[in-house]
Image (cartoon, helix red, strand yellow):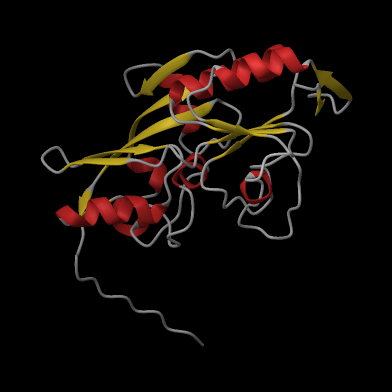
Length: 232
């Protein structure tokens, strides 16, 4: 495999040796894409069509182990890193030029426990994925208002939605997270475990790590609801 040209964290250009890149790609359970792969063009596109960036490599993670490997690979080789959850980021920060993109879109599973009224949500899930599973039990999490929005980006920045007046923002319903930190460690965080980290991710924005799983408290909603939307 030929060497791969990358952008470093400082913005300079460097190259990853082909053998090192091959060893990394072969060790992943999910897929990885570079510019010569057929699926690369579609994988680099995000919701904001005005963003046109070309990452050096896109990692379509299948689980936390792939995320840990990708974070470690980026750190050890000083590669610019971006994280894509739902890909709905308006500013285009979920993709980068010449860097490595950790794409969580395949990690979109949602598991609902209707007894405890909790939902475990993958870091790549969309709001529509969550609503589909929770409404099967007449429950909902206070997430956003557009079904194609990613759960991760919305929640980590607070998360305003239709249920906020009664149940608060998305981060208010967050019970715990699983996260891969910049040193490649896998941690859980809640009010009782790593509470400082849990405080930081509840609306603190990004750069605390890559959240692979969210646990939300759910509330009885619907299935029939009333919406009033007056316009002047």
